[in-house]
Length: 432
Image (tube, rainbow, N blue to C red; front, side):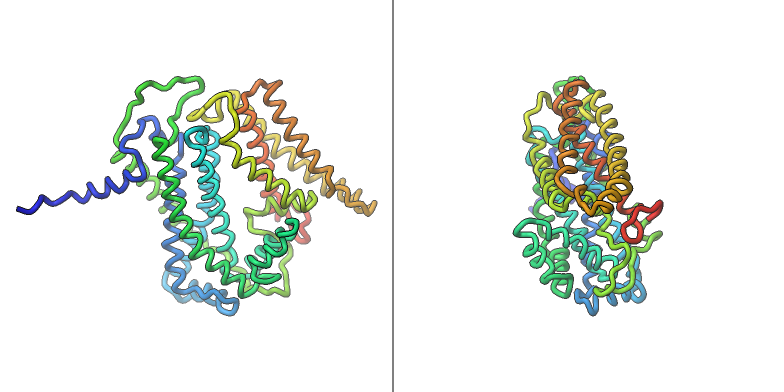
């Protein structure tokens, strides 16, 4: 006699449980903990891969044909403009949700043991998302993308010894050209998808090894032992499916309402005014206007990267996993840090632009771009950390969190200033 037919749902359930525990704490299902950001990011990545695969049937990665193929896609291919819109807005949305996901993990203490390695994997995935957006930015080969890539890659010249050779290797020459377009196309459509397909399942597996996401709790609350558990299928999977469908609907609505921008065809002999990096790199370009390039492009980004990698391995006096902002006092410290970061950065830009710049020009002295500004920033950061630790009585967790918030707020302020308030000649204006 033949065996009884198997229920197809059983195979789906077994597949899903390779990436999820069979049971999860009921508390972990609260939307206010994770906000569905991990599921949203995964959904957007799937949309990007699917739409990008379809775009490859039309796109031609040569300077002579790239721009025309984008125009042809929008005018002649049925639903072609919608497909390009979906790809562009999914890419920007993925960058946004990835940043928010990292912030959620940080502010809920989900980088502590046993999740330290997954924090590093998350940083790697974030880097892949940034590189994906950056390499895809050039592919339309219009004025905006060409000169944005030119400005961004010129930052590599400030890296001692290896910067210029690295830039020439990436571009395939001294400036963007046919080799650059082919390099970016290959990285964007082949190398990065393969890396995502390896890194993302490993990220999911590490979450399962840690028994899922952290469990939310109030400051000072002791979790009940044992925790009430529910089955992953259907409780968790149903919620994840709802988030995925909502994200897909929102991105589709954006694609229907707003066309992806496309300027005139790239002209290497005529730069636009102002010439700006992609919006997510404008914080770095704005920093270059106020600090010596060695500090703006090498030292400060390097220290930030090292700090992010070191965060889960520092010695902490407590493990506040599951508590937003560590405690009620931590919330106040983070809010104070955010306000100070925006206010001090804005004030520093205005002072440098209208007072120090004028004085330096009158003296013929570029002292404002020397070592002193970096020393001032370092002293302010160290002093703020010490202030949160001692006078405010914050724990090391709260002090690290407050310093991180200060730097995030400062970078956000620089990004907004560069994108919205820099006009012709990169001069400050009320509307960029």
